[in-house]
Length: 288
Image (cartoon, rainbow, N blue to C red):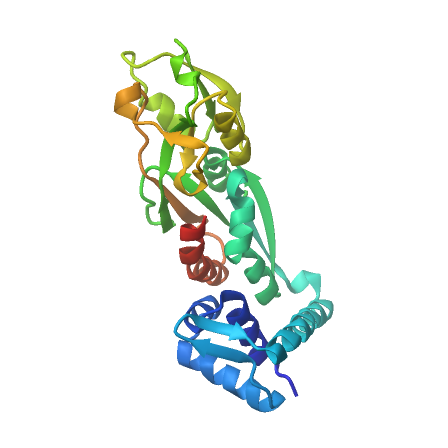
């Protein structure tokens, strides 16, 4: 019999390619995950993973089992959902920055939805400034938001995010007397810091593009339409870094990405969410 718990560990190792990373994702010890893989190999009578100094990779038998593992785990979750009354499922309302919702779905939210079926996670997107206001108004149980200040007692730091002023490689936009910028919308802390730190002695600026889409900001830079504050992990070889002092630009602080919680919400559920985010984010922060 293939136990769901063993299959979940097997999937985690297959997806991360590493026992240690799989253990972090599952909030278990590496030795526990290793033992579960051994039990699964004993059950199937097959070697499922090749292990070396670089990590773990699937054998031919492992690749075949992986397809069944996904189906069995998904079927198990569907069965639990069908047997659970919607009235018994606690709703968690989460706010996520519009420009990073896909990134966060990959870094723990999908896993939370799959694993904690007794919670119903609903996600809404907005710019960080609006998310803070809506959390204070009681619209959310928690938000993930960007700020230049460290979180206080209701916040949990996830990581620091660096932004840089960039323009097109060998671009001409810097030659204009009024500097054209592409920025995030009103109420975005990044945009707020641009105007807060802009001095009269600096070059005059004009907002050419206002959008929550980081892809649109990058395109405006690459096409030499504007300069923009771009997250470090989005930089590419079509861009050049701009020194604020040299080009008369407002300095950009380091921004903190944090989970802020409503103190009236279920602390146990939000602790689960925080643990999953922390377990998944470290690798994704460096991957971008």
